[in-house]
Length: 288
Image 1 (cartoon, rainbow, N blue to C red):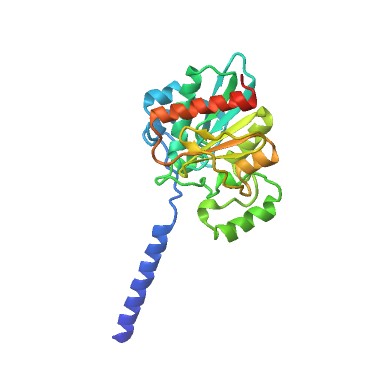
Image 2 (cartoon, rainbow, N blue to C red):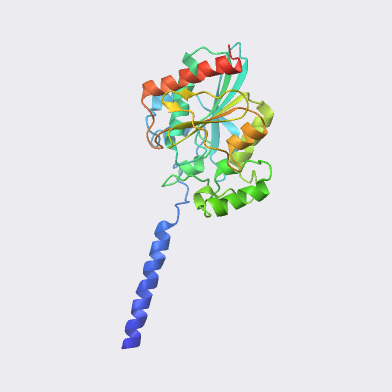
């Protein structure tokens, strides 16, 4: 009798432990539209059900175009160019590198509309969602479908030595910050790397959340503020876009950290951030 009771107790404990482990495993099953992976044609239908403060009208007005690159699970990346007839600068604006930062994608979609309304001597290229696999999971994930943090996957110098060590020692092997097995191991980060080589932007604006600050890497004098976000340079990380683009490639990288990952700022604040960005590009990068 005692042995039977002991085995029952042991079995219950093991089952409980297994359930607890399962409960803490990240949800890595991508959520897709009923017709399969998203494309430019289905982007607004799928994403307006998920993104904060983005109506179908705002998304449709963006007139997003599909790019010849797909995520790990086959979701198409989309973009929109807004080109001034007298463009002097090329500016690449990227949102959603981390899939659980929904407000970043929403902000980029609003800024596409602002670019169409506000004169500037700039060729804008907007990529609102770099990590569709992470954002479309049942519970949005920072990482992509293979569990890689795309913002630690760029080929910064000494990546092979620094990125794995930083991940293991500084983040204690946090799965949300896994840099990948090698730099540019993911189709999403490889596309952005190759796009920088092809298109050669004069400025990269990378939108994140939720730290509520403004970061900057690279040459020239950084903006002191965009809207209510003030400059607070937080350092560089192995494999990050700021490190690779700003420090290594010498392309200025403005990193916007919105205050909340699930809510956008008020529309007036979104507009003010945009106007401040335009003023800085005119004053410091020669957009005028």
